[in-house]
Structures are given as structure tokens and as C-alpha cells.
Image (tube, rainbow, N blue to C red; front, side, top):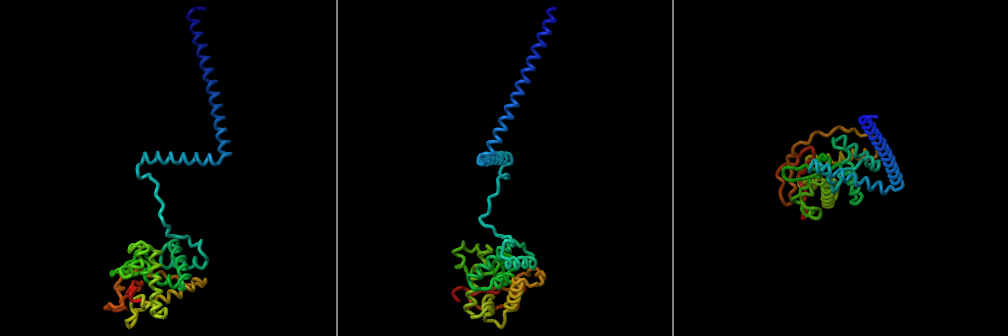
Length: 286
């Protein structure tokens, strides 16, 4: 055999040995990898705590990578301190009926109404006031708009004059708490209690609440509240009541919530049909 033939034969033998060794190493590597995967799977199945810890670490790593790539836009949102909504289907049947009926009539989402209905029932139990009366006042005063405000400063769901009843907000965060729906309702109910106690009757208390106690009439305010109260009472008992949508809220025309010693110069009949506040008594006059 010539030298060239011997060289070619040696090269072929070397290549064959290298290929065989590579295949053997690869085969062993895949076998080892398969064993490692199987071992990890068995360990994670037997130890759920290890799996959860691994998932948490992986999620943290992925979030860190996302923030690094996208910057502040990728940072997760922090949850709010309060959830201002409740699924009405989780409420007692009576409260659920009221929430869904109000939602349809006033075109408000049922979930935040669920929270207000539950709060009204809780306040009613504590204050001996009918919860449907509380909800009726909210309906007439603001149409369930927690950010409603009259030209003279009546604010929130129950259109409480914040500057007159500042003392009632001191323990719950100050004047800005007037726009917290639950806080506004609690303050409004407290004012309503004082008005009813002063008048000695519900209808008289409503006249005080709207600031028309010393006027010939209240512009139909008490009648509107009591009519809505009656409808809500019917709904609560399961009786069918038409839900004619409420008209769009008109711009407030008269609110004075001044102390009783201050004269109310505008006629009560000018009050908005959506129930915007005419006046509330100050605590010092109750």
C-alpha cells in the first residue's frame, strides 16, 4: 500500500472514531438529561412547596426582566385600599332586588350600587331608619352620582353641605371625605336623624333636611322622596315595579344649606327635580 493510501485510510479511521465518540457522548448526555428531568419532575410532584417556590422565583425573574426592558410602564399596579363595589348576587335576596332595580332605573353599574345598598341596610339597622328611605333620598338628591355638587356647595350622594357639617367629617379624613360614597351616606344619615328628631316626624324631617321648614312648601321634595321610598319598599318585597329610567340630571338651581338663622331668599319650588340640595341645618341649630 502506498503512503498516500495509508494516509487516507488513517484519516478515515480517525473520522470514524471521532463520529462514534461524538454519538456516544451525545447519547449519554441525552440520557443524563432525561434522567435529570425525570428526577426533577418526581421531586416537584412529591414536594408541592418546592414547585411553588420555583414558580415564584421564575415569576419574579420574568417580571424583573420585563421591567428592565420596558421600564416603569411594566411595573405592576398596586391594589386600592378600598373596593367600592360588591357583586349584588352575593347580597341577601332583598338587597339584590333593590340594587338591580336601582341600577336599571338610574343607569348605574350594579356593583357599586350593591355596596351602597348593603351600607344603607346596615345603617338602617343601626339608626332604626328604613334602608329604602336612605336610598330614596340618595336617588332624589344625586341620582347616585357620588361626585355631584350644587352651586352653593352641597356635595356627594346625599348632597350634604360640607362647609356646614365640617365637624361630622373631622374624624373620617376631613372635607374631601364628602366624595367618598360610604362616608357621605353615613354623614347624610346622621344629619337626617337630627332633622327628624327636631321635626318630630319623617315628613317634617325631610322638610328640615331640604331647608324648607320655614317655607310655605318644599317644592315637592318630601313627596318625591316618599314616592321613591314606597317604590323601593315594593321592590324589596319582590313586587313588580316599573323601572322608568330617571331623566338626565338637571343643573342645580337652588341650594343653601345655611343655618336656620340665615334666611332662604329663593323659593323652594325652584329646586331641581333630580333632588339637588336646597338646605341643611347646621349642627348648632339642631
